[in-house]
Length: 249
Image 1 (cartoon, rainbow, N blue to C red):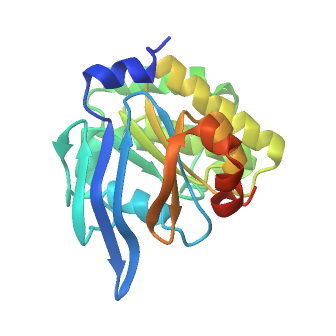
Image 2: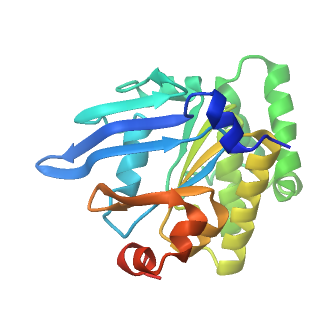
């Protein structure tokens, strides 16, 4: 099992750190000097209401939208302004809202597409086997069209395709969107298991605050593009002022 994230954090730079990250869409400031730090091997939630800046944060961190100012550091290396494809090669993967699954392809074709950045046929084959071990339903449906999958299975496929690239940090945008509560809980359990088994760092953007706080170690809450509060997830979930003011609980 992977070591405690707190122990790794004491001897290693943060897996992901943003310093003063500011993003504009035209005249609108969508992200306002966001300082955020994610420990290696953590499952870290980024929460907030619609329009709070959650998706913008992921897009800026993953190179999809250049920041107006501030820095993005990946394991201590400044990657600010690096294009998304370069960040993928460095181990930062972004799974967008809806997962971006290619429904006209089979499950295995989607997974193999995700593994193209890996060098060597043997490495790609090994990665495919590991994904199937993590997500057994995908193995059973490997020759089926992705269009035939349930919502939960499509999320597994989206995450599995990202894992095929061998990430060190994975950014997930609303993986529970449109899923029934039972399937949402299953996806959160899968993320916890994935982190425990592989040591992968997971940054989870979620509208479902209660579910995300129960699954994660720490969380940042955004409000109008700025950090409103942050701390251990259990503390935020148990604080009635935070729950009422920022989480809608």
